[in-house]
Image (cartoon, rainbow, N blue to C red; front, side):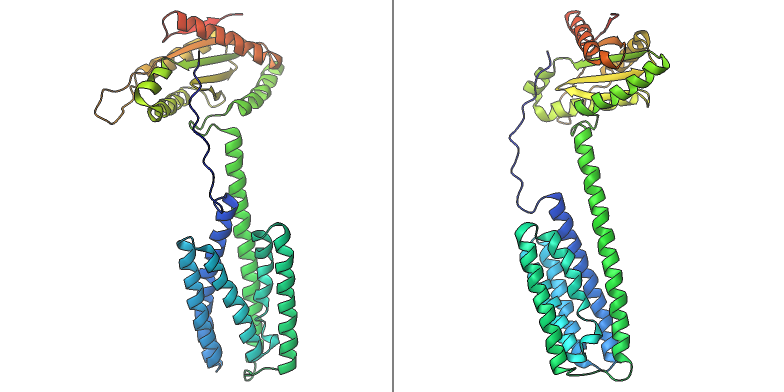
Amino acid sequence: MPTQPHKPPRPIAPRGSSLAGKAYWAMVQRVALTAACIDVGYIGLFLWLGSVPLALVNLGSIALYLGAYALIQRRRNVPALVMIWTEVIGHSALGSLLIGWDSGFHYYLLLFVPAIVIANAGRYAVPIVVALLAYYVGLRALCDHLGPLDPLQGHGMQIVNWIHICIAFALSAALAGYYRRTILIAEGRLLKQATLDGLTGLYNRSHFQTQAQHALALCQRAREPVALLLCDIDHFKQVNDTHGHAVGDQVLQAVAQIMSRNLREGDLLARWGGEEFLTLMPCSNPATAQEVADRIRQAVQATPLELGDGTAPLQVTLSFGVTQVQGAQDLKAATARADRALYASKRAGRNCVSVDWG
């Protein structure tokens, strides 16, 4: 009988440890570093245009962005976000007031809207966006009322505006692309969690059943035989009790790797439960599957597991049950027949292959 491995209680994930949260803060960190690099170029630009005050503003911006980057590295995310907000709000105000609204410093405020919505789901996003809108409108009104306090000479305003337009477009595209890649990675990980066994990397039970139904339907239309192999690690409970669950996990992983190497690309292999593995072999009859099972059995027996603690290698053996699947509707019954054949191998002394020809 397969034993059910002990399952430790699921740890409570710390706040902010979700994949989406990590992706968001990684994006914020990249933005901070990119903005600091841009401000280095701005210092040279404004010195060339004769605006020393704006050059000094950008020097302060670099300090704030690098400080925020360092804080995120230490997982002090809230102070880092405060520093970034301070820089963007202050810089947009000082730049717009010093050389005029048409300089385009206010574009960077608009880049914050998607970040606010992503980071503040639910009821918090709307009031924050409304507050930002109020600040934006108020800053525009103040600039219109005061006019540029330190206007640039010649075509300086147009140069700065065009640079801001290009940077704003580039940052928008880069951030959107970065977050899209993050979402695709997250979807890939979720798909992996939904289809694969986390320990062995094999198909899990539910995904195996889905794939098996498809393979059986194809073989049934082509009138090809299909074999089913069910195997169990002998004395696995004793391995866990004697050596611990960590060694038991190593045994499961080693067996999964050996089985994968000895099966064809089109064969379906899953961790069926506990120490049981189930294999569907399309276009194979039970006699062929018996040969494959015996080859796997011998390979596992010939590969003792090194424990790395100075003790003798751990000898592992497998017992197999083999049967034929008559069609897509027969999978459940075929699994029961393979299970009976597996028990016949156990009664025969283990480390052998039995076939149910029914």
